[in-house]
Image (cartoon, rainbow, N blue to C red; front, side, top):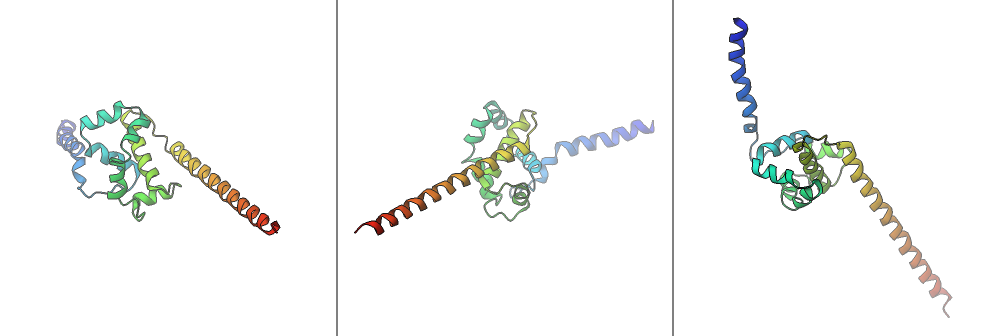
Length: 160
């Protein structure tokens, strides 16, 4: 009998708590880690918006929100300033560019909506590989530019 009474007193409270967890988010809330950002988006977006996002292939869904929702995340959540816990969360994992941070958040949210593993380490590796390739290409351009400058100087010296 006591178990039944405890169940009735605890159950409604637990259900109410679970249903109202979104109320903890203010209009100026800034998530502090990826899981928190996903939960915040789940609370913030309407079911219709979530279904429309979910219905698109992942790459198109994320790309379509880069300049809207993604830009709002980067600006409103202070990702450009890099001084809050969400920025630190990503920087400690090797992600430094705010575009990459918002991309990971949106990709992870899309996967979460589909019930898939977000594969955070793989996402991070993809962005790091992109930046490494960009650094290598930039280095090659600098080397080629320097070689051209040396050739031009050498030809200038050899011209009577």
